[in-house]
Amino acid sequence: MTFRKQILVFASVLLCCSPLFSQTTRIGGSNTLIYLGQRFADQYRAKNPGAQFLVRGGGSAASKTSELDIVQFEGSETMGNRVAVPIGTHAIVIYVNRANPIRELTLAQVRSIFLGQITNWKELGGADRRINLFAGESTTGTLAFFQESVLHGEEPYPFEGKNNVHALLEVIAGDANAIGYGTLDEHPGVRGVAIKSGLTSLAVEPTIPTIRSRVYPITRQVYWAISPNAPREAKEFCAWVLSAEGQLVVEGAGFEPLLPEGRWAGLRRLGLRETPVVAAAH
Image (cartoon, rainbow, N blue to C red; front, side, top):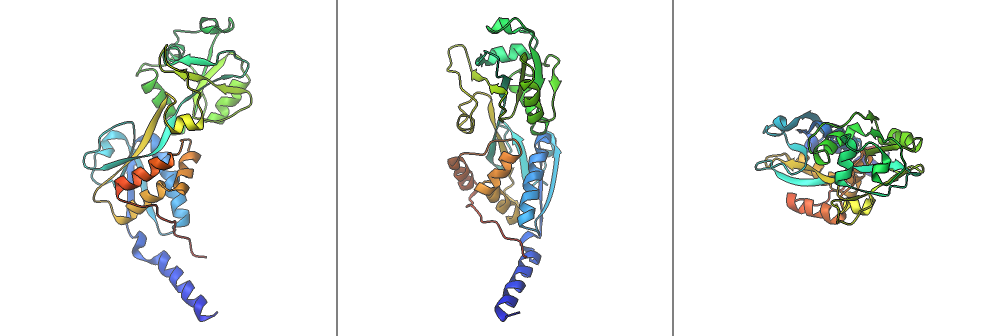
């Protein structure tokens, strides 16, 4: 081995064993975002083997503890003196079978359908057939989001739940009378319904641009709130989450990435810059 190679190997060992990741980054808060936090931690650790994470839920009670470096939450909660930045967008798409003539619905109509107040497609201008209700994508908190934002906290009419959006779209593709909701995805046998906020509003199609820009009505942002006393490791982790690579994890976990200007604004708010990933030693 040449002297140059010996130096490179020695530097790589120092990188993995140095105190760069000497502290554990503690992440908690929303129970529905545990999976997302774990995905972030796993992907980051794959490129940075020394990184250490503790990801847990605990809901709003856990989010108030000073022990956490990063709090995950949805909506517009305040987090005291923590700096909160959006890390992704969560959208709910209403799906129908592609043979269904219904192409747009108001939020009030969607609410009435899933409360069992509208039970036949003819009430919406469709065929005289009973509406079959479905829902999916439990790992992203979609069910709770739908109940809060569309049903205004009321209990939904009985529906058939699916574990993921792929299973949801499969069943809707095979049922001409079906309607369901889940995260954004594609299937040749189904169609996303355009949504109107009100009777006089324009109907907005559920597309990547309308969701990421939050023009589509059924969207919310997912946030991280960083403790002002968080260690450097936690802040560098946040910079990676807001990087182009980190946002791929957001997309893979069922959410939509931020627009570039949103990522840059978050980095500025945290006083950070986009951080390159540390390569693992070979």
